Length: 425
Image (cartoon, rainbow, N blue to C red; front, side, top):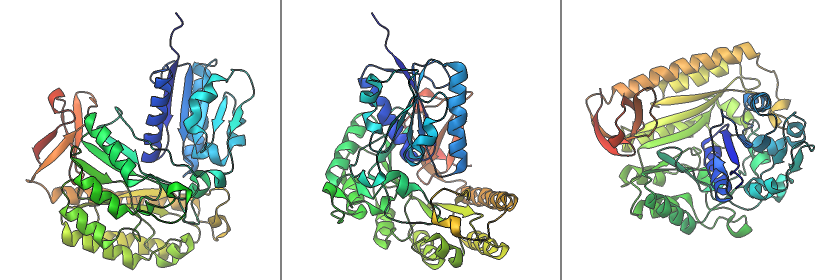
């Protein structure tokens, strides 16, 4: 009897990528593959790539080189955003056998059936304008929190971003389908679902191949809140101009949606926001944060911010720093701007020196640390429910409160995937 082939996965980038990797894993397991650890030996290695930063591109190359040293006869498949944007570049990397673009990644089982080691790398990709279908994805058995993709693609044209070129136009699942997936996840024991997408607030567009919005994100969360079985939902990230006041008020009164928002800002300077082609100004962002605090003083608010964007002067950065310092938010995700091919930002000058970009990144990461310490300290002495995760790291386990405060404690198997009342200290 021929032993089953093994497959190993590595994911770069966002929560959306994690949900899609999990789906690819299930597809291959259904086809007879056995999933194994990426750091071990496998017959097939699948790398799901990101292209938001230059580091993700470099990491992909490093991973392929590692596989070549460890298992030179194994198949190497590259998919994800980098694979869609630069398929020929990836195919030229020694050791790569198959490059799957946005339209082909979910056909991975069929492609592997006809793949032979030693041939030149095969590219299966199409122009991103031809990608119009929506493929549901969710992570399962990977984490306690399950990431459920409900939207894909983006119709925005931010000057620094390659995502529309890598994932195509905005398109969504239907409310009915999302409810069915949520019910199935609940039946499998999932306690918390994180709704994910490229531009989540744009949910409802692109159904049935059309561009017209047929449903809304607000309608989706209302229906999910009525669904029995899932105890917690989180909204992964939502643009400030799409975070309506009714969504904020709804979450504040929701039975199941957690008091936790992650809202991209990118810059606290209106001039830089204009150059970035963002669809709001800092005043709107401040209004949204103030409204959240009015309804939910205990709510966790995360912020994405980019430093070193072309033409960002010391004065512009000081605007961002001061704005964030004064803003009642909980933590920051800080990104150092990196040049991406075919983006409008490449034509903006002057370019910020890399050393200055890193200096600004460090300043905002220090500010984030202080913000998180302050937010956590505000809840000292409170008892909140913590959902503990399954990972045992050196005898310790982690979990998160409803408002996303991280708790670490000695591992107890009976607490895995359970909501536990926890006094914060």
